[in-house]
Amino acid sequence: MSQADVPTASGGRNPAGQPRSVLDDTGIRRALMRIAHEIVERNSDPENLYLVAIPNGGEPLARILARNLHEIVDVDVAVGVLDTTLYRDDLVTTGERPRLRRTEMPSAVDDRVVILVDDVVKTGRTIRAAMDALMDFGRPKVVQVVGLVDRGHRELPIKLDYVGKNVPTRTGETVHLRGADGCLDDRLEVVLLDAASGGTA
Amino acid sequence: MIGRDLLGIEDLEREDIERILETANHMREIGEREVKKVPTLRGRTVVNLFFEASTRTRVSFEIAGKRLSADVINFSPAHSSLKKSESILDTARTLDAMDPDVVIVRHAVAGVPKRIADVLDAPVINAGDGAHEHPTQALLDLLTVQQEKGRIDGLTVTIVGDIVHSRVARSNIYGFRKMGAEVRVVAPPPMIPAAVETLGVKAFTSMREALDGADVVMALRIQNERLAGSYFPSIREYAATFGLDRAKLQFAKDDVIVMHPGPVNRGVELSHDLADHRPSVILDQVRNGVAIRMAVLYLFSGRRKAGRSERIQGSS
Image (cartoon, each protein chain N blue to C red):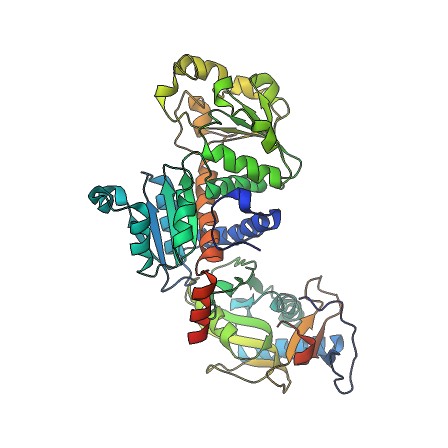
């Protein structure tokens, strides 16, 4: 994420070039606690859960979810990280290849309830890539998806099972999670940038 | 960063090398999975154009391409059209008309991959040309050292053997120098190129001095027994003076690692015992070779000359 140095303008309308906060730290943590409860509600066997984060944004979210699940049902839920870059459908013939990210799947996915965790979901193409990648690791019993922010603009038949917040956006805008590189207790924030400020999401 | 072709380490910037190593590190994880395949280069064609016999490098590129789901075609013109006196460039042009996405070239003459790259639309990866360069070998050596030592900057690397005929030595000298290591070469004097110091290396004829404090020792293959007599008196004498064994390694650092591009002449460049056991890391080099070649195929495949890429973009 390259916009770390852009000053924050929380709330209000979106003056040209200024990032607008769409979900602050408290809001994110509240949403993740609610989602943890929903996960427990929907899945009778929490021992069988496996949280799989899509880097980079999904990682801190998955770890917070794991901590929340531990609080609620006293179970240590496995957390994996799955890079989707090599499964993307837009690796065009020209231009720079995207940087790869870490993949770390500490336990087998066979017969597990795998919950994919991403920060911002838009077209659904990343989730499609993640599902393909997941299948190369085995045959999960069920796959569910957490999106902290759902922007709409879906291009594939993909629906989210758990949503932090629906944020209607225009296609040119970018939405991203800040503070996702640090430790669990760093302040997180989801911000929206308009097209002119040239974000990369 | 990173040009269209990979012809030599000499052309790369340090950040290019770092990007390739970082990518290869992620590619290595794929080799540890049960399903060792990702769909990244599905529908792309990789051509192995090997004018000089090679099994190890060709197989390494072939596995790398297949792990990325590319179609890999092996073409060894020595056995086909070249016998009908078709020129190398004609062979390359014919291949190019079949629209490969990347062409891997090995040739016994320095500069041939460059000549082929000049006439092809597809990017060219040099898999070894004469005594010029063998860039993917140097990259896999860099990756192996980085993995073993956690860094390359500030290390002392000693290369032992036939420097003057070795593309592996040349590529490694460029690579390790660019990454901030001190590079020494040691060999019988006729095997050390005249102006080797201009590459930023120190030349030695004494193993004891060359190995003193070394973190990494790289032995080169004695390519040809015919060298005996003109470059050194006999294979046996070469082995006694420049062959690595545990006694000579005493001069190096305690945690020294020993590398060899393979195949090893056991009892010549390395003692039998060193060829198979730590501190030699020869099989790690082979494993890393696949990861480096996956990284190189990922980063370079699909790049084309400007005119061609405009055409592709225009049609989409």
